Length: 251
Image (tube, rainbow, N blue to C red; front, top):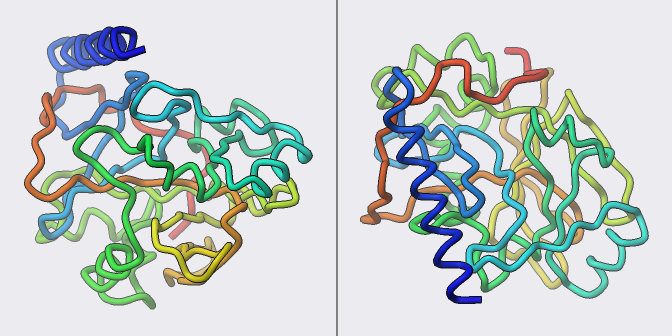
């Protein structure tokens, strides 16, 4: 397993180096263990992924359980086992909006975020909202397609934006809700046994809401770079059309 994972990581880095030199627009990106490439955005010195996570393996190479049916999703929740799915079990949503994870996946000791990155805790989400004018206004700058996003030249280090996409969520009973109207993001912070904090945006207003919910629910995931970490190929050349596509939260 160690040898296989070493080879996997080497191939991933090679792919990322090809991405670096084969395209013509400078931007910050990060690659996961599967060589998925994500744009990143730096806000007040804090670097976030600008796209939803789509990885299906933990950082050590072990596969994350794919819980497609309602029965499989409920079973993973009961066992406290990490799981992922596509919204409505339709891969097209995964391609455009990323995939949904339960809370157990993002806190698995094998690691979900790329090396040098982590899942933001509740404090980091709160800090992000504060830097963008507070919870009542931050959504205007975080939504994909937000007209105000590029006006924050003092906050963003480049023209990249956060691009919060309305990927909906999956309840712990296996049902899906709110694709194209709501974006839900896990924090790594526990609330009480069986419940954790999350943050979400709604298409109809500019607020960033904070609440707790069952750890068995499925939500989108963003990652934050560890402070002081170095990721190879941090500045790479990628196509301006390589970003996430699909329906976006209107401003």
